[in-house]
Length: 123
Image 1 (cartoon, rainbow, N blue to C red):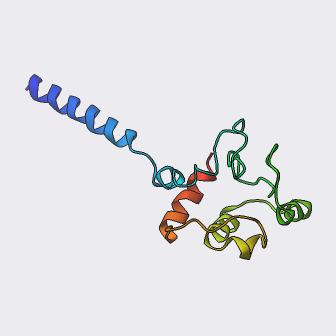
Image 2 (image 1 turned 30 degrees about the horizontal axis):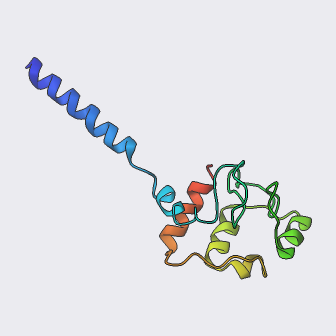
Image 3 (image 1 turned 120 degrees about the vertical axis):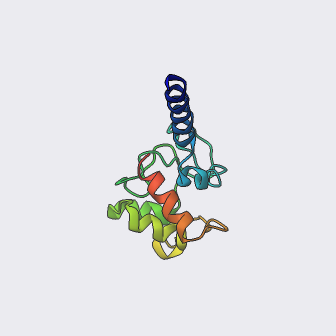
């Protein structure tokens, strides 16, 4: 009985660890974005701005990034990132920030976009 209990506890710890070790779907999708974007505010010189603290952040306001005139105009209007705006931007960037210098991410479906948006808004 004691051996069976120990085995069940060990299995639970192993299985629980495996579940905790799994990456959120949004983190997996974000890997495709990392060629241009980082979640590290100190990482400069990338093609796109860092995406840390995106939830509620005013468009075009990441320090140290040279934004397009379109993003500078969005910043002047005080437009901020939220779930709907970010979903729209990943679906069709020009519909949200015309002339914003980003191409839509290739190969992302609606579920991928929702997962990465939810992930980014928690970073």
